[in-house]
Image (cartoon, rainbow, N blue to C red):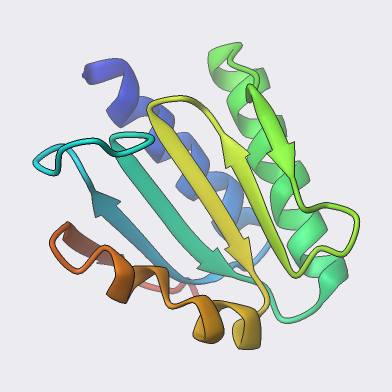
Length: 119
């Protein structure tokens, strides 16, 4: 559990390093049959920013924790990229794609924590 908290911290740092916005952590630990225990949802304003956020997250987790994602999906069009760290799934969206899929609403039973934007 402690390792997961540290992983989440490093993922958040990676997002903030590239000015990712509207970061939400969804704690799914109290919900049965979920694909992971935590979702981290954020957004970038362009496909190039989304890709940069994904690279930054990967760099932070590899350098600081020696942890690589199991899979990264969606980089080709970079409208919604999912990064799988098993216990933690990271979703990096373009704003309109995030609004369309509305994962926060989908997981409304989860405890949601909003991280302040660094401006």
